[in-house]
Image (cartoon, rainbow, N blue to C red; front, top):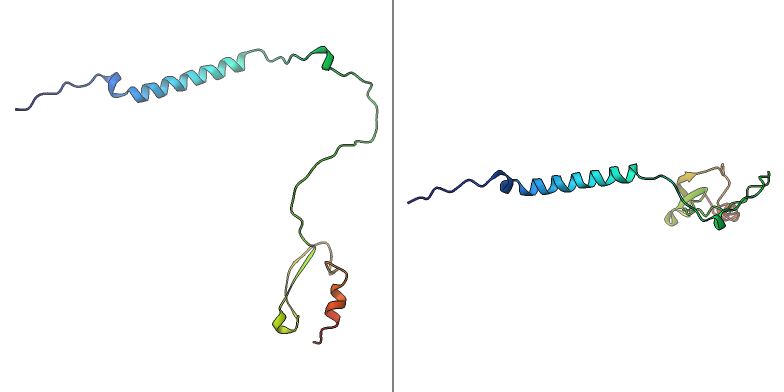
Length: 111
């Protein structure tokens, strides 16, 4: 014989959704209370420095990290007697080689 199962109450069936909603509402209330609180920054009087304003050179050191790229990059194929296959990139150099000895090196290669 089959036994009729009682239907669970709604708060048992949706307990995880209710818990998530309550936590979300608590977070929203917390954020509202923090944003409505005092917006003053209190500083000790000994730490405040007051001086006369004057025009001078702006001396600030900015540490910048980056990659260095050459102005001109040339791929040389050794099997073809050092002839230039293609120029990969050119910068502001406008034909000036990346290092001074490169013209002397290429001028000695027979074409």
